[in-house]
Length: 154
Image (cartoon, rainbow, N blue to C red):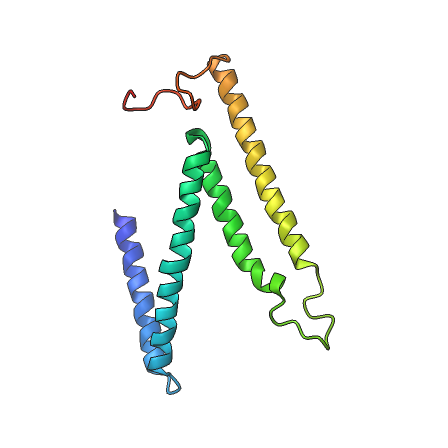
């Protein structure tokens, strides 16, 4: 609890410093700042959260319970890598008269990284299943999903 209070205090002080710094800036456009903040809120709540909830529903529907944490971590990693790489893949900032600007095949490289995330996720899931089978002596689970009995006994 103390750590949470300390983090909230540090965050509040940091935001206060940022607001005071912005208000001291003579070139500040309050309307532009408010428009930017509104865009961030709309982008977060109407785009990012809807996509996140949809991905969570798909994972819940198709991924067995024992693999969901691993699948969530892989999905979050893939989303983060894609968000960072997307401007390069789309070529933002590429100048036609300067071939040395953004010279690499970013689309292919993004695909390779995403395939590595998928491969690491699948291999980790297989490794965990094998360890689990060895630990239980190869016995099948009581539940059809292979997740074993739930903590509430159902």
